[in-house]
Length: 327
Image (cartoon, one colour):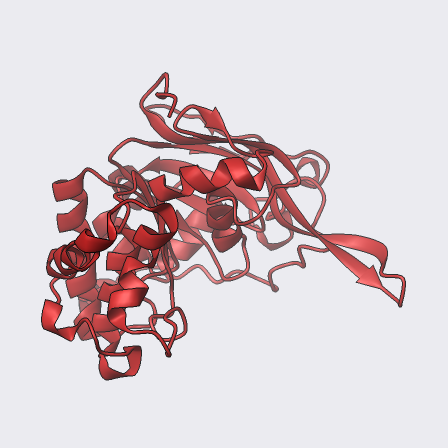
């Protein structure tokens, strides 16, 4: 594989992913769902980039485009120095061993008819990374890596708890020693008591194996804990991106400020004294998004110019980028 010329594992350049809306027997196209609308950012080697935003804003679609599960409408996806955005499937397959994904639902993402041995080792079989005689040993090592007892290899998914199932999903994602792992809300379906264990496991594995994470989530407190940088997404666009500590201490975009004001604080006095920002209206449809800045219909700072021209991400200092005319 071609070595990247910089320290970036992934670079997105003006990425767009539109889904066609069709009607009638002839499936005549009548519009587009603009799930990802001109997104650009990079993920550095060994870092965790958190991607946050409301449900339906395009976070998962962005992750799937990076994995090339979707072929983007336009734009570029540079993975380890290679542009994979328009690469044919037969060329993509060898690259996928360098990518892993952890799904949101530890119940629905595992085949209920397969044993844990087969589920975890499937990538080894597909990519032919180990000999048949070494298969069981490799799977046992993956079980130990994520804190599971290898004696459980012949169980089926319903014999595992929710946390154990997610550990199976993590083991499956790491089977081919990927350099990038897309974590698509990996703890949102788990009990709170289990969430911390999974987050700690992900951090330990990153340090041990030198992994890079794209961590997609809507729980901002978890993102703050695990992420090095955070990108905030609204209606298919990135509105703010900076270091995790900087974002939580100095949020600049009105949408980011509203999101952070909704995060509970485990201190009754502080929780009571702080101001909650309540956004007006509902999230517009990605079929017919607002002109100019997508957030302007719900923003208290919006001016007439906000509806006429789209704000571009610009650096306000120290790598803190914001897409807002008022900042």
